[in-house]
Image 1 (cartoon, rainbow, N blue to C red):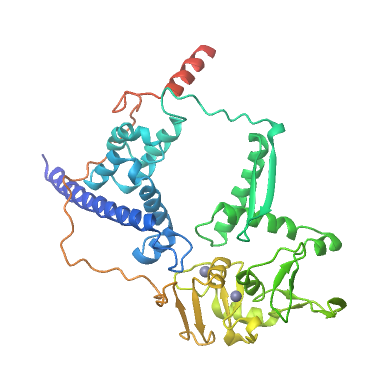
Image 2 (cartoon, rainbow, N blue to C red):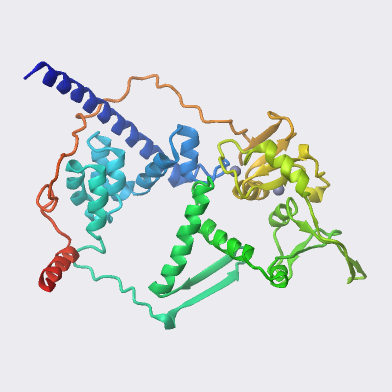
Length: 410
Ligand SMILES: [Zn+2]
Ligand SMILES: [Zn+2]
C-alpha cells in the first residue's frame, strides 16, 4: 500500500463514519416528521404544508423537506428499509427512491438499496413497473368514452366539489395542462403546489384569455352583500361563509346597488377596493407575502389588517401583502395579523394558539455528542453493473412477461 493509498483509505473511512451519522440524523428527522404528520400538529402554525414547516423549522431546502416528508409518509409500510436507514446503512436519498415501490416489495428493494447509487435506483425502481403484488390481477384502466363524466357541486359546509372520470386519452390532456400549470407556478416561485392550485391556475388563465369583452364580463363572479345585515351570497343564491365574504372584501371590485323596499333601482360605478396606485405602493413595500417563512411573491392579495367591512381604511398602514393561502388562513381564523404594516417590525403574526410566529426557525446546537451509527455507511457499487444479476435475482412477473413478448416479436 502506497502512502497515497493509505491517505485515501483514511479519508474514505472518515467519510463512511460521517455519512453513517448523517443517515442516523436523517432517520431521526423522518421519525419526528412522521409523528408530527400523524397528529397534524403542524396545522395551525401558519404554514402551507408539513414540508414548508420543515424548511422553516429545520432550515433544510424545500427539496430535502419534501424528501423527508415522502419517507415519513411511507415509514410504517417499509419496516425493513427504515431499519436500514435507522442503523445508518442507507442514505435518505436512497430511501426516497426505494419507498416509491409498493409496500410488499420492502425486503426486495432493500437488497437493491444496499448496492445501488441514487441515480441507479431512480431508473431501476421506475423500470420495474410495480403494477401490483405478484399473482394479483392488473387494474383495468380501460374506462371508455361512454363512462366519461365530470360534475361539480357545493357541499353543505360551503366548499366547491369536483368529481369525475375520463378515459386515459382525454385525462392525459387534462394532466398535461395541470403539469404545465405546476411548472409555471413553480417558475414564479411558488412552493408546495397542490393539484388544486394547478386546476385553479388553468382556469384562471383560460378566463384571462377570453378576448370578447361581453363574454369576459359575463365570466366574472359577483357576490351580493347586504350592507345592513352583512350577509353575502352569489348570483346563484349560494350563501357564502363570512370568512369568504371578508376575504373578497379585502381586495376585489365593488359596485354599489341601491334598493328601495327590497327592489334595486340604481347601480353605481365599479371600483377597486384597493386602488391600483395604492396597491403598487404596498406591493413595492412588501416584496411578497409578509408571513414569516413564506416565500410567495406572485398572485399576491392585499389584505386589510382591520377588515374593510368593519370600517378598516384603505391606507398603506392598514394594508399588507399576503399570498392566497395565507390570506385564506387568516380569514378562516387560523392566522392572526395585527399592527402597522408601514413599520417593518410593526406587525405581529400569531398561530391558531395565539403564539407569535418567529421570523425564522431556530436550530438548537445539540448538547449531547452526535449518535454513532451501528456501522459506517457502505457506499454503493461503482461502474456498470447489470442489476438483473447482482443483488437482485428477482424480476417482477410483468417484466418477465414483457421480456418474453419482446423476445418473441424480435
Ligand atoms: Zn383579507
Ligand atoms: Zn404566504
